[in-house]
Length: 69
Image (cartoon, rainbow, N blue to C red):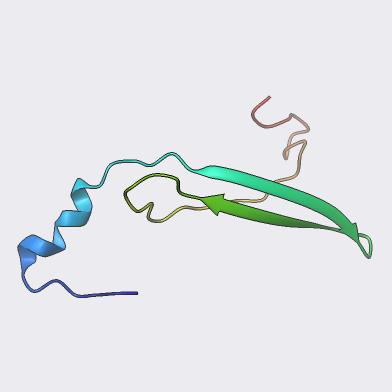
């Protein structure tokens, strides 16, 4: 949903939002020779979390090194 602010001051309120901690749950299954990943992203906080981005990468990474391990 997009709602335009009635004046320039209201348009700046998004800048005051703080970072939010998100909960991520992922489940992978093999289907027809491919891996299908379902991801649930939840914001348990009281403020909105805007522009969350999820990027799928190979588990070993492009150079053969694991991510986040």
